[in-house]
Amino acid sequence: MSRMHTDRLQELLADEALAALDAEHSAELETLLGDCPAAQRNALMQVAALTQLAFLRRDQSALQPMPERLKARLLSAAQRSLTGPG
Amino acid sequence: MTTSKSILERIAAGDSRAVNECVDRYSNLLWSLARRYLRNASDAEDAVQDVFIEIWRSCARYDPGIASETAFISTIARRRFIDRLRQAGRAPAMDSLDDEEGAPVDPGVAATVEDDTEVEIVARVLDDMDPEHRRILGMSLYEGYSHSEIAEQLDIPLGTVKTRVRRGLIHIREQLQITVSDTAGGSPE
Image 1 (cartoon, chains in turn orange, green):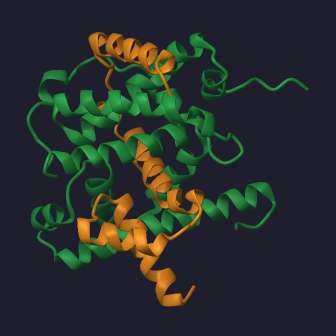
Image 2 (cartoon, chains in turn brown, cyan):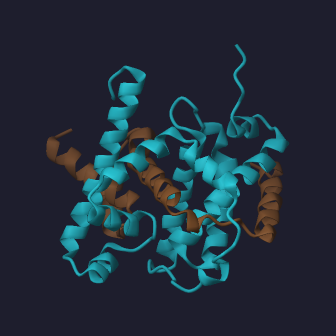
């Protein structure tokens, strides 16, 4: 894999993790990824997710309890998902 | 030596009690992230439900040797939140955080975030970052603003925003690799 190819791949993976990928660049990313291992594909998304958590940690006012009705909906969906086909 | 299994490993093994534990442990965390990132309560509800369904379906793929449970779950969440933003036409609806201001903070949510080593490392990297750079990164990663919205709000060129968020993310990844490598006494891949 050429340096240019690697740099472009990293740029597109960063944009994907930053929610900044349009349809055209998304298609370009899929082509460049080829059979790239899932772990490599996921690495920057995981860094973005950890960073999101680190910001939440700094912003204690954003911590909110989930509404009980949504929690009940989740548990019901879990039962359907885990007992359903597939 | 006895090793206790993670919640996700127990769900994958068919332990139905672990499902309730997973919801108890992560629901408030994911809800808080979704409300901040997506803003719109209805979008946040749908997104969080999608995240949990994805967790049930993919828990068998979880490997504690690769990522913490919190990192695994929050990565699934981030992909789903991005999908939801895209479906909603990208612009976060800035309508209704007011109704929940003053709601009691669950100390368990804070503990979940504070106990995670990787989150701790990233928090330290953010502390050391230039404040304006950190602000741009936060608006993008945490608050769900598009690059063009950030450029407009901060009155800086779009290209500058793009460069800073990309560099910020890659810098955090490098620092994580260095710190994890130092801790493990090995070298990153």
